Amino acid sequence: MRAKGHGVRFIARADARAEVEAAGFHFATWQRTPQISPIARTSDPFQYACDHLLFGPAAAQSADVRDEIRRAATDGVLTDTALFGAVLAAEAERVPCALLSPTISLRPLPGQPPIGSCLPAPRTPEDRVAVEAASSRFVAVLNEWLPTLNEARASLQLDPSSHILELFDRPARFLIAISAAFDFAPDFLPRNVRYIGPLLDSSDWSKPWISPWPHGPDRPRALISFSTTNQDQTDALQRTINAVGSIEMDAVVTLGPAVAETILHAPDNVRLLASAPHDAVMKQVSLVVTHGGHGTVSRSLMHGRPVLVMPFGRDQGDIAARVEARGLGLILPPTAAETEIAAAITRLIREPQFLIAARQFKDIMAAEVSGAPLVRELEEIVRAGADA
Image (tube, rainbow, N blue to C red; front, top):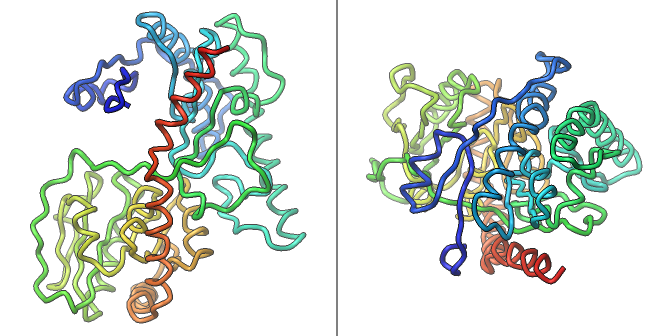
C-alpha cells in the first residue's frame, strides 16, 4: 500500500509497536478494557475464543477504532476478520471496510465445510447433509453472542443486527487470504467475498540461515516446523525427530519460542535450530513436516514442497484435509508412533505424485498472488465509497 503512495497506519496490541514503528508506520494501541461475558464455557476452545477474542472485546475495540478513525483522515479500514469491533467502528463512521481472513473463512460459505469441522469437501448427498449440519451448528454458536454484539452496536448508535452473518455481509469486502485452488470450492461466493491468495511475509525474529547439511543435495532433506506458540508439541516433535533418525536423510528442526532446545534429543542427521528463515530453508529441502498452520503449509507449496501434516487444533485439521484432498501430502495425528511418522516421510520421498502435485501448486499460487489483489481490492472499495 505504501509503495503505491497510500498512507497506512495501524492499531493493534501494544507488543506490536516496535515492529510497526520500525517499519515507519504510525501505531496506536487498544486503550479500553474489554468486558468478557459470563456465558462462555471455558472447556470449549471455540466458545472461549468467542468470548475472549471475537465478541467480548468488540465494544472496547469499536470505541478505540472509532477514536483512531476520527483522529486522522481515514478512507478505509482493513481489519483481521476476528476483530469485530473494528467492523462496527467503520460502519458507524461510514468508512469502507474490508475484513481479512488469514486462513479458512470464518464466515461459513455455502457448500463448504466450516472452519474447525475438519470435514472433507462434500461429494455425495450424505456429505452435503453433514456439511450443512456442521455449518448450522457453527452459526448457532456464533448467534449465541448476538446480544453481546448488539450491545456493542448500541454503544455506537447502530441499529441491532438480526443475524450474525450480517457482520460479515455488510462490509464492502470479505477477503480470504488463501489460495482459491487450495481451498474447497463453495457453491457460490456472497457478493462481497473475494479470494486474494496467501499473504506470506518474512518473520522478523528468525535468525540468518547457515546451511548445516552434512551430506550432498542428492540425499533427501526435510524441514520440521511445528507451531511457534505452545500447543504441547514437544512430545510429537521428539517422536518426529526420532523417526527421521531411522531414515537415510537429513533434517533441520525450527523450534520457535515455544520449545527449548535443551529438552529435545537429536540424532546426528537432525539439526535443532531456534529459528531460521523458512523461505531459504525450503529451497534446500525435499519435504516439510508441520502442524498444519496455514502460513507454513502455504509457504511450503509456494516452494513446491510436499507436506506431512500433524494437526494439533485451531484451523490445522481443515488445512490438513485440503492437503490430503489435493494430493499434496499426508496426514497423521500428533499422537502417531515413530514408525508411522517414518513410513509417511518415506512415502513422501519415494512416491513422485506428491512432489508433482506440489510443483503444480507452486505455479498456481504464484499466479494468484502476482497481481497484488489485496491492494487492488482496497483501492476499489475506497473509490466506490468516494463515489457514493
